[in-house]
Image (cartoon, rainbow, N blue to C red):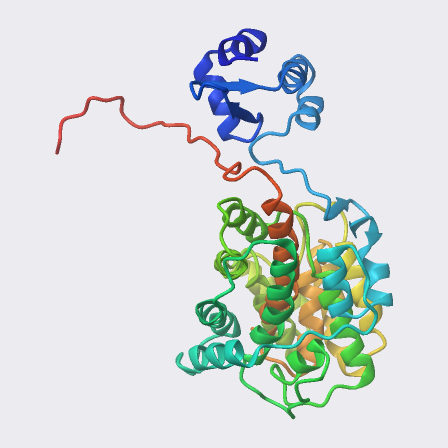
Length: 400
């Protein structure tokens, strides 16, 4: 169909048809003569039919600018599934590197280990170590990913195999750029064991290490969270994988996203020290702050990932005081726990600092960002470009 025909079928102006294209509702192709655009008649008919149906049905048939088709993660009130597999079952059955690679490729490679490229790791460490000593782990991760990108001449290769190869190397680079706090497990150690030694000086028990790994698998992805949307927008513009992760890390470094776990950690530490979750909750509310680690906009009840992680944390004796405090906080506040509260139990029990949960979150979710980038690279470029609704003064306005 021509632009005029499409506009007539939809009952809109030609300008609106192009607005639908910019918002990702329609796809278009240049006409053979290079003048104007043509549109798929079936797509036009589908959009026209959706406009005549109730709003919820219309969104399913023709997603709006904030809806993106994806085959990675499905979220339901009682759980989330990665490529159709229950995230909790995957966490219980597979290691982090196996699960991350499966998320990217759809193939399972038992016993897979990611290894860092020495030049990239050296550049990342130099950048991270140049930061002030008080910097949070996520500050170092952001510096590390920029430095690694600059050291990788192949970063602009967006072929699927090349992107996956970059991802397999980037994750250990990010972990290796964090300062060592415990014994160095060596370059052949699993990624989770290497991360542990950079977050606490304690030696992990088998139950502790297994629980951290399971937590990281649960955190692999969670549909279009703010950081993942940022990653997809960057990938839509064909940013290379390092830039995609950098964009996502910028969105993650926010009090309502990745940094939420630090507040939950500090709250639980205070509750354990005082021996009273009720006093801590009352003090938090009295100060006009929300109680961290509670509620989630996509789950009406307790976050299913938190439920699973709480059950696994029961196998770790050192986490018992923090776990008891977390459940008391949720009961006192009368709101269900989310994954941030469960992760805070793990970091507090392991003797990690408050910012450790954000580092765990960032490293784990990097795998999800790469999965979304791979998916977005297969879509039409720059499709995630919504139109602004201008509310300013109408021109002409005099130059001030």
